[in-house]
Amino acid sequence: VTPYYNKATQAGLVGHFKAVADSVKIPIILYNVPSRTGCNIKPETVAAICKEASNVVGIKEASGDLSQIADIMARCDGEIDLYSGNDDQIVPIVALGGKGVISVLSHVAPRDTHDMVIKMLEGDTDGARRLQLKYIPLIHALFCEVNPIPVKAAMNMLGYQAGPLRMPLTEMEEEHQETLR
Image 1 (cartoon, rainbow, N blue to C red):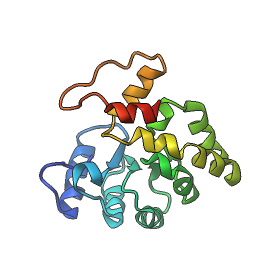
Image 2 (tube, rainbow, N blue to C red):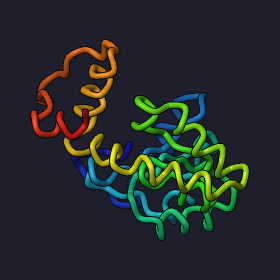
Image 3 (cartoon, rainbow, N blue to C red):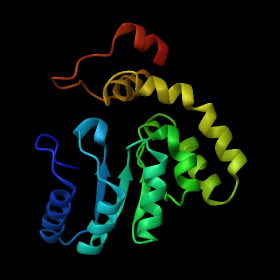
């Protein structure tokens, strides 16, 4: 993930991720989530990181910007595996060449999340679209408060022992619990 307090320049991000990649011998997936970190990894920066660090093999893209995601795919030309970081954009991101999703929805609807991706990869865009649209209300409910508050509440509602939240996270608002339920 990008540094979240000291907002780096794009050159700083290349240097940061290269240093991280050089310090380990395992594959790395970047996580671009500017809504949480305040720092966006631009498409040209993703391409530069891929050239500088061969063990950077993927990116979880959660910018929400489909134009940016298309630009990443065009610039990287198969050099990086791109995964949706937003459950409401699985179908369009896979349509742009994404490999799948790193998902919150999959915790409560694993089979259909899997099937949505497989249907897209196998060319059943109508089937994938139907699943994407079916889950939009649940996806919105899973993000009505800061993640992971809603997904932990959902898991507990389903009978799994997801455990308590740790501060500064608090229990889900009652009205949101009702919507989620």
